[in-house]
Image 1: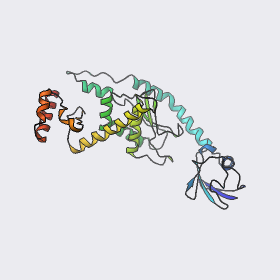
Image 2 (image 1 turned 180 degrees about the horizontal axis):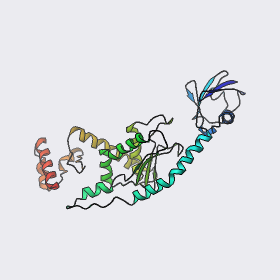
Image 3 (image 1 turned 30 degrees about the vertical axis):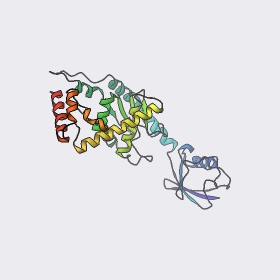
Image 4 (image 1 turned 180 degrees about the vertical axis):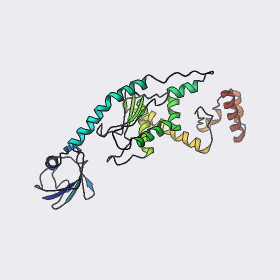
Length: 301
């Protein structure tokens, strides 16, 4: 079986027996290109070797005599270079993490506000892109957008989530993961870039992963408790954005949101007492909304 493998503009003509395994092919390509077998990705006829067992033979893998194959992968030299750069960054990143974990500087104020204090505490205290990867400024912009996302800030305030460092996963750090939570919020790492590192993943995809990792601030294992909280966070993000979009149920600058649920919505009153809640049942929707806003204004004053 004669195969032609192309890698970075270089073509290699190879011959194998049909019952040779994929492992034999990968080993031969590693000799020729210095690309480790586990980092090789072979593309041919709309297929990919990434999900195939390397112990199956070439025929079972769908390869045929005369077929052309495109190989993707990082060489051992490049891998070593990336690791060396990452090692050089470890000390600086460790110092930055330690500073972030010390918490924000206390601010003097003529008044007191628990909501302002919460906004300082329940947030991402440090944003760190990987400066040795392409376009670190774009990575920082994406991290900043996540940090400033009103819906994310809302759930962090509501559930009292604090994260020391929000950063990105390095190219070869846990390649099977899209995100990683270190020590229940000490650091959250997100896979911001595409698998080929030629661009960035969509914002909504990265944000869903962030909700997943925030859930690990409370639950470590992926049990039912984890699944329920993860679903709740995603639902609260969606509900918050829906309420902001329609201009309803937003109480004020503090980021708190009035979130009614089903038939009990009229009984959820911020401020006031039970009698005022009962009276809401007899009012029109416009009157109910006015009463809720007035109660919110009184509470804020």
